[in-house]
Length: 76
Picture 1 (spheres, rainbow, N blue to C red):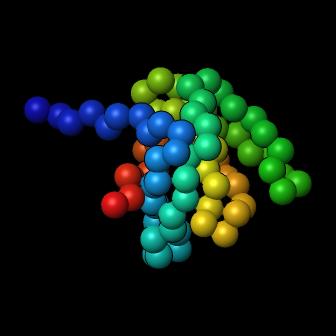
Picture 2 (picture 1 turned 90 degrees about the vertical axis):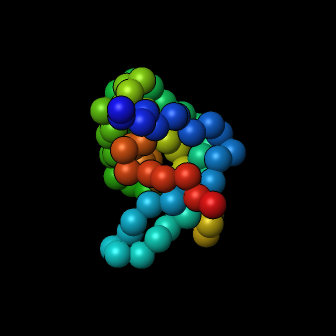
């Protein structure tokens, strides 16, 4: 039996590995379609879909970034 990861909702606190360290942030928005955005002067793309949504995340320090569902875990 395979467990399915459920999409995170806005307001969810998530974590991921960043250069071997845990990084944390809050989900601001969920995207279920191909996404292209300019962030910090760079064009960022995410091939999001319903099975692997992309998230706009606000880091604890206030910066924002885009991450795919497959890269995240729910923070406890």
